[in-house]
Length: 428
Image (cartoon, rainbow, N blue to C red; front, side, top):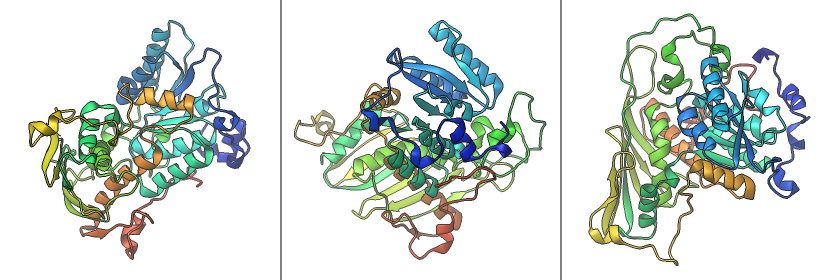
């Protein structure tokens, strides 16, 4: 189906639903709607590098999940994912689509895994939830407005929604957060977040012919019209502001989540942000490749973030705890902190050491919230977004996490959202 011929009403009719208010979540009928073989049926939307290596393989490893369809605008990647799935199950039952709406229209699919570029995360999530699907979706959102709408639609539809990152299932990050929350370093006052640097400046990239197996129009979707070149798509979309927020939003969603978790601010956010960023002077990429940011919370905690390399450090009145590198071992200012045992009457942070996919499947069946639900994911993404906005404007900003706005700052508030290319719209 061509995008220009699509409307929300035609999709809902195609999916067997006339209008969003008439979509009734499975929870209304007493919980999970089991497939005949008691497995959760999954449709994979986006099967690129991470979509296969992390997410498709993650679900194929689960005995109570059945991947029944894969979808990608790159036909080569779509076929490879289909072959991998069929090989895993020893059959040829996995369907393959170029248009994600074909997956959403199937009533036999319980849930979808969305592993597309960032600018597609929320539009597809909204359509999936309104079509009665539970959703696991890669991070981050593209704008603050999109994140808020995503949270609201998840609540309205009763859909189970998992913000897809593995951090909360990793022992080192869970351990650090519990130690801080239970006062093992005294009163927390500073969080240091190290992130990777972004893409460095590159020379201008000329337009190229669109590969015959690549639906570039659908890849762009709601993003502005732009000439095709390979350096724009697949992994490299991260460095272009039309599709993502650069290294800050790509890796920030990981490390900022643990920072929020440890600071007990996962459902709110900082009240000020300031910093600087360095941007390519020319070429295709236009997100910050170097940055230094300072966030301040209402409880007085300061969070300092830069692109000097991955790491976390929580500093308190009685010591510190942290690590260096991705999933680096936990270190602390004293052996006593490292040996500390979290007692049964202390704060026990919810996790699932089986991983994000295991947690999602468990929650689809139980109808309980996932360990990284949309509200917490949205608040984490908002930290990335307000940081990018502060760097773009080049000045310190006040942020009201309750109202999700920059008080009295019209220029900053305009950057909380952006237009979408017709015919796509959020349809809040």
